[in-house]
Length: 406
Length: 166
Ligand SMILES: Cc1ncc(COP(=O)(O)O)c(C=O)c1O
Image (cartoon, rainbow over all chains, first blue to last red; front, side):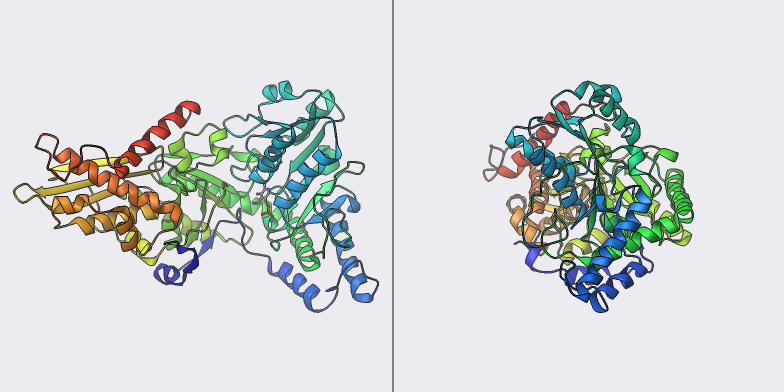
């Protein structure tokens, strides 16, 4: 019997409502800033709810909203407003970037992507193998930093594109993208550089023209904006062929009706993140380190995945618990009102460990018990303390069920 | 994160995950076995106390390293075989386990298969120095092979990806 059509009412009833709830899974999506939601409601009910390409007041209001967000975004990330292109998601932006470049630039046939990229970068690149492209994954070290010697030797005159993310979504490694771009451009100015910066937006300060990248991806829900909106930065002069076609739109790469409310909410979320940058940044780092240190003090047989300190994203906590299986940890913590995700997905005969953890050299058993937690501006110190009070018990209970003992 | 599909468990899985029945190593077991491995991410140990005169399962318990479905499958199986004749315990199928749980998403069927694999290994081990009863096939059954394949597959993967670090 397949459960998919049965719904989950029963399951949720059995789960019950925990006495406190802490949502730590903003990696996979999560809460929206209420102000961003207000902004969206405004564009659904009050103004600009029409199509931004049409010549009437409501259309012009919609267009004005779009321009406003582009100006705002560009001022925070260091580009020109018309270098920003809206899309439906970070996944779509990565696909459009990679497939669109492959369509636009004929001749070169090699694509280099880091081995820890988001799958929405790796998979579209790999899909090009069927069209005669060579895709090579760049190795990383034990903390996720690009192996620069190996990388240099991979760049050649056939290389069309390099894609290396600014902040790794799973282990929080902050890559020296500026240095990596310099290596590439020193070898060959014509090689294009894409960086998935979805997990950097709002959480780091950076300047796209200073980094020197040609394309960059940003996703709205990763900055506590609405789901279903994203931006692709394309440096002026770089050609990206559309991969989606349809009716009129202000967006060359996104045919169809622009989602103005979502874009407006996205803009508001980015504005909130950068207007409160110092406050949020230090709060996130404090919570992050308190979680990491607290877990190391109270639980044995744990590993931190990714680097420590300044080279780690301020919100990222990724820890492997030996002798526990990741999905069981997510369920156990859920019963205690703590919502996290695991790097492994037990959806086949063999648990699929995360490709990121395998790329940094984690053995399968350490990868299987990995838990990813992301602290967010909405959290309080009480939330963090609650997690620290529950986590050791949760791990102990699962270890007591297991036949494997330390 | 790797690709995922929704995993809406039936409530019984969560119930048994919260309060597993027959959990723990059994000190006076006279048959036991393990199936799966740490590297696969799922592993079940089964302990049996068999009444040697009557060939009846007096007690059964389990330990599990794995997901919630894995724990629930092992737990409910120990409930199902308690008091049964060995031959009937041997014949419990992974489908019956899945049904007793109220159904499982298809990607979790292997949890039931692994539980049965561990049970049959334990029963086989029990007869190691005894005469094999007629109902016990000499050839490994599908469920036992499944466990073996899973363990072997992982060995292969390990060799391929031998990165050394923990
Ligand atoms: C680094 C990175 N890139 C891309 C994506 C995909 O974005 P979206 O969820 O908007 O498709 C995510 C989302 O988690 C991400 O973390």
